[in-house]
Amino acid sequence: MSTPTVVLVHGAFADSTSWNGVVEHLRDARVPAVANANPLRSLSGDAAYLRDVLASIEGPVLVVAHSYGGMVATQGAAGAPNVVGLVYVGAFAPDTGESAFELSAKFPGSTLGDAVAPTPLADGGQELTIRQDAFHQQFVADVDESTAALMAVAQRPVTLAALNEPLGTVDPAWRTLPSWFVHGAEDRNIPAEALRYMAERAGSRSTTEVPGASHALAVSRPDAVAQVVLEAVRAVSGTAA
Image: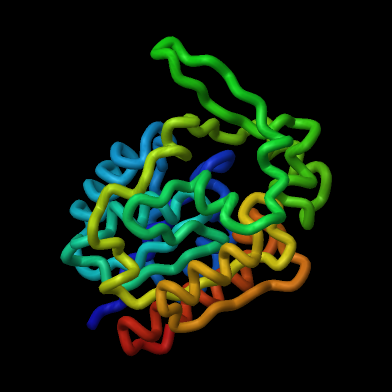
């Protein structure tokens, strides 16, 4: 099999640039990558958009997802004929009927609820952001203050509806595709215990817990994330990437 294109799916409170450090490592290894712009409006709509992106890529694809992006990848990659594997980076790996909010509360330890601020929308819904004064410690405690401040200003809001929407597919992508997991030991959005639970349930090929790393470990520890992604690339393609 040829080297797959890595499609990177960001989660809530982030954007495509959160993958920049990982992309640099992939470029050094000559692995093609596309950073998907996740709309963060609804799980079903976000997954449909990802599926369109996947269909536009020629050849095999490895989907790499962070946080809520794991919800989107699990639904959007289900049954996609060119997807050959999944990497969950501090990400939800839901089963049918589970929502991001449900999974984040399954085990104690998340402090996200106290850090978010709601904004009403014209359609009667709400979108959420992390308060700028709380962003550094909540989302990416292991980077410098200046970087965290820029990320807080540039964060992408997510709708409350998206986080509450249950996984709609009856065949979650991790049931039929090989998966790899990597997460931060100090994740304050999704408790590490929840991430370990989802990795075990999915039959993870390998699960890497990065000591001291925050929720946004693709930003703070792109080397550790890229190492797992390249491990997955090698496994699905048989290359020496």
